[in-house]
Length: 404
Image (cartoon, rainbow, N blue to C red; front, top):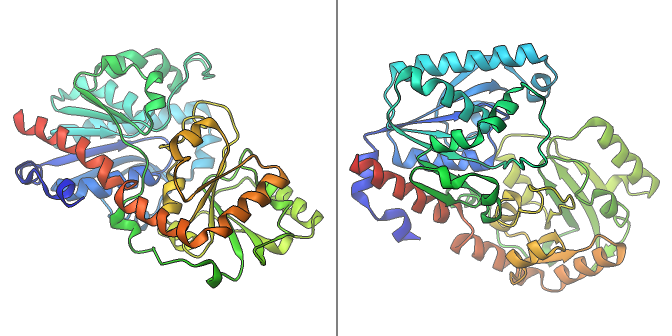
């Protein structure tokens, strides 16, 4: 690790004289983007983040970049419910701001973090005569055979221009090798990378504590992320009245949730008499994610959907490795994909979500809890951290920049 972070000092010295522009339009920065910014700030003199102004507090960043937030602040859900004309106008304003900024500031590299930001940059780069390098880091692949986009929408433009957009890239990265076939990587000018969505040691080292099951008053199961169907919540709620290794079970759900779905889960919990064992932590600053997880016992990373995104999550699901980073054993849905990636890990356990399977799996966790927790944190420090996978790709880019 020390060699990975400390070698190639000449490239780092060169990069510290440079600026980098990071672009984002859709959604709010998720952990992989936050981690990338955190790492970029170690290598570049200035990291400017030009994004559509969807509500996201500045204090949410582990290391806040120079922020250029375009448009009046609005939350994601409200923006999604706006008219097509409003969305087009908002996008046009973003493109105009990007033109203005690129004409004022020279960047040797632009790093793009979503498809609509990629579209915006493609539309304006000729107008400003941009001659630097371009790197697209994508988390959400498009299955063009099954994609359902509204005709003449912005995403329709992305789908129709997909190969052309990639032919304008110098670098491309995605979090899973299984997703590469959904991108025209053969059109990329220089190089493509697989950069798994692991958490950073720099941020997560502050939240680890040694864990022993005998110190836990209950087995607190946590799921963090977008809270929707397909994660086994209903099945887990039904067993919350049971005990495992003499400890009561609790389910903690952290993240955004539709109010109708939340009400249904609460009704199910009340029906089974376990409403006091189900809690919702809500969406919060990034630091609240490891703060809460470190107070829980087992991490849940169950995905039952069969779309591209859910069947290629072995290295793309940041929550799996965020749990490991704070020393939590992890329960996954029992599929060949997850078995392939994590079947040999002492901290990974599998369930089919039947009552028998859930209780058996939780019993397995309890039997070897201390060793599993220790193995999780060790694997994170040695292998499943963002520094280890992001640094080699960034070094390659820096070396190319030095040669220009």
